Each structure stands twice: as C-alpha cells, then as structure tokens.
Amino acid sequence: MSDAVVIIPTYNEIENIEAIIRAVFSQEKDFHVLVVDDNSPDKTGEKVKILQKEFKDQLFLLERKAKSGLGTAYIAGFEWALEKTYQFIFEMDADFSHNPDDLVRLYDACANDNADIAVGSRYVKGITVVNWPLSRILLSYGASRYVRLITRMKVKDSTAGFVCYKRKVLETINLKKIKFIGYAFQIEMKFKAHKKGFIIKEIPVIFKDRTKGNSKMSGSIISEAIFGVINLKLKSLFAK
Ligand SMILES: Nc1nc2c(ncn2[C@@H]2O[C@H](COP(=O)(O)OP(=O)(O)O[C@H]3O[C@H](CO)[C@@H](O)[C@H](O)[C@@H]3O)[C@@H](O)[C@H]2O)c(=O)[nH]1
Figure 1: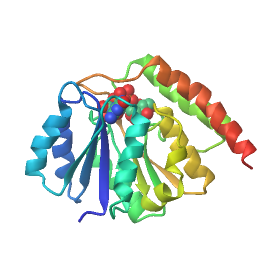
Figure 2: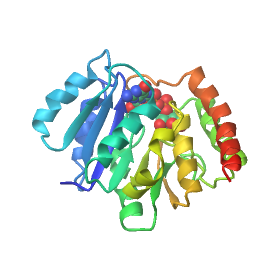
Figure 3: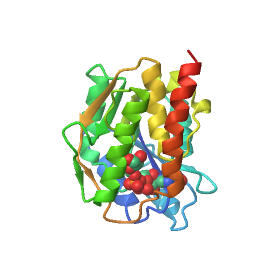
C-alpha cells in the first residue's frame, strides 16, 4: 500500500490520460492514482478502466455523472482518499502542465521537511511558465498578486493546481464548507489552510502549457475568483 495518492481530475483528456498515468507510475516512488472523471464525452473514463486491468490496486477511478467543476472533483477525491490510509494527497492536472517528475520534490517537502502543504509554484523565481500566451500569464500572475494583496497570505502562486497535502490538513479543513467550484477552489483551500496555521511551502516548478486537448478556463471561472477572494477575506474577518 502506497502512502501517497495523486488525484487527477479529468474532463475530455483522452489525448493525455494514458501518458500521464504511465508517467506517474514510472516514478521511483510508489504513488497511487485516482482519476475523477466527469463522464467525459471523449471516453477518458473508459480508457482509465482499460488501464486499471494493467495497474490493479494502484489505479482508481471515481466517475461522476456530468461536468461539475474542478473544485467539486477534488473534494470528491479528497473524501475518497480520507476513507483510505493515504498520508499524502496530491492534486495534479492531466495535461502535463505539471511535470510528474516533480511529484517527488513535493512529496519530500511534506514527508521529510516541515511542510504541511507543498505547492508546485510558478512564481517563486520570477515567472516559470512556458508556452502560455501573454494574456494568460498576466491573468494568472495578476490573480496571484491580487490574492496576496487582499488576503495578506504570503503564498505567491495561490491558484496553483499542483499540490501535496498532508492528510491532517484535509482532515482539519471542513471540506463540506468549501464553496468554490472553479479554479478559485485552489485559492480557497490555501487560504483556509493558512488560517488554520498550516505551513505552506512553495517548491519552484516549470509549468508548461498543454500541447494536447483544451483548457476548461471560462469567464465564469474568472469572475468566481475575483469576487470570491473578497468574499473569503470578509468572511474570515467576521469569523474572528
Ligand atoms: N472532473 C473534472 N475535471 C476538470 C473540470 N474542469 C477541469 N478539469 C480538469 O482539471 C485539470 C485542469 O484543467 P485545465 O482546464 O487544463 O486548467 P488550465 O486552464 O490549464 O489551468 C491551470 O491553471 C489554473 C489557474 O492557475 C489552475 O488553477 C489549474 O489547476 C491549472 O493548473 C485538467 O486535468 C482538466 O481535465 C471539471 O469540471 N471536472
């Protein structure tokens, strides 16, 4: 039994799913993988079922009926992982924008250093993003500056989706109360963990834009983040 599971949410990732799963299982450390698929029309889930025959007891699949957002996919995955004995629970995109070779560095920060959360960060050493259009870099970097300004949280890449959580973090945060369903979910999780006093460490990574499939970014995801951050901050002030 591995002590670490990598949760990969998927919606229409047929071009990436097999390669990313194989890349995780080719690491020296033994990771498990949980795919949370939202009934992808391109049959990503069916592909995972075929791979499960090869990776018995290592590869798991949670199927949801319809596309319901990145945040709720992760919450479903966290709840699944907490029912098992995993001590380290990861978030990672399916599209290779996060390099699976960095998984061990995030793991080490939590398992062998003092991090409660290790964030694969694009903004520790300047901006380490490859192949994103300038507009997307500005949006993401601008969002990270905006979050720091409003929340006063020191994390530089608050929207990062490449994360290792120690089990106790997910046990402590009330997952039922996580509100955001888009990428703002990433901000909310880090902010709640920060408020609980957990140590968040940023590990520099190079983020590469996907070469296969499409981003699910949308206008509603952006507006959820803009208004959501103010909402989070206000709620935390009144909770004092
Ligand atoms: N199950 C499920 N998965 C989803 C959904 N929406 C997106 N995903 C999956 O979530 C991962 C990230 O989605 P992308 O659409 O590829 O994200 P991106 O535009 O590249 O965004 C990146 O930047 C964001 C902002 O910094 C990050 O928050 C995000 O994690 C990611 O790194 C992919 O594996 C994608 O299939 C959904 O509604 N349901």
